[in-house]
Image (cartoon, rainbow, N blue to C red; front, side):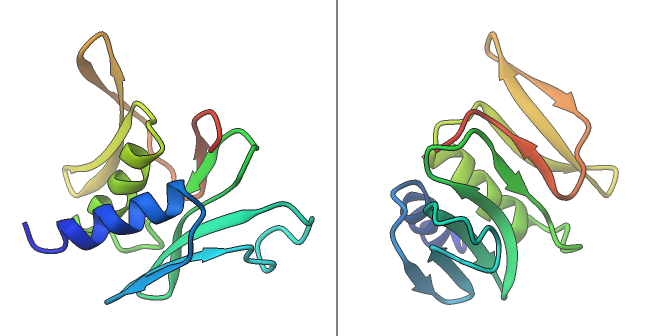
Length: 122
């Protein structure tokens, strides 16, 4: 699948809080525009839009499609969720994003809202 290697590399960079830039993907570390509190902040930007953000040592990451509800955006978000070992996936159902949580081997659909925070931290 095109873009999978770049998405996976960006997801790993996010999980390791390492700057990364390739094609339309960029991982920014210590992005003062988001938090400004001295903590290590990490964001994954796709086409210049912040789609995943979080702070090292703080519970949860924020996910947002920024209005781009397409396979590329979902693949990038999923790459981060996989790299940080969260039991979540995002997908599209009936032209709308859906958050799935892995529970007992099943993917259970949950409500997705742009800007939502999920998970247990980096």
